[in-house]
Length: 167
Ligand SMILES: [Zn+2]
Ligand SMILES: [Zn+2]
Image (tube, rainbow, N blue to C red; front, side, top):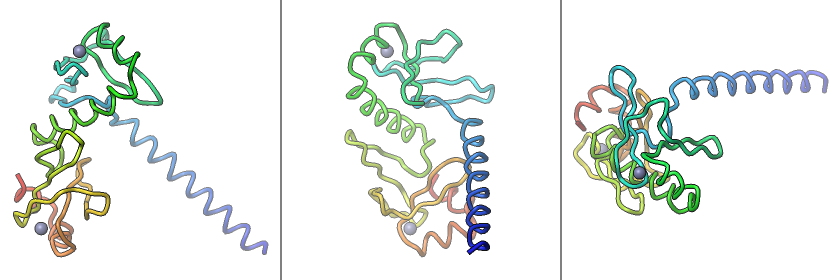
């Protein structure tokens, strides 16, 4: 019994440490939700709810809620978001994904529908509609969706080759 408790304590400590480390990682490279581009100098461009692209500076308007930050082009847009965040922000999240897909920075997703459905191109050439059970891999902070375990094995063997094939 004593040994069991010690084991549990150790597991808890290790788990807590892992949480702290992963939280640290996230904050390090976390951008606001609607940042669509970051240049080599680290300058960010965000997509406002109105569809305008905004170069982010210290003075850019922002809306912060529940740990999420959105940059907005004007105080008018900020007032709009303040008024109806629960409808505007989910729609904006989809627009941001669609823009990233267009820019080619959403892994191998190349299209996002108005309802947020993603379509990706697997390295074998197959188009796939992404759902919760789609096989996926993370690489360099991006998610790649894969048609089958067979193609996943190709990815695991040489991720770069897979990624080159879907570009
Ligand atoms: Zn705006
Ligand atoms: Zn495939």
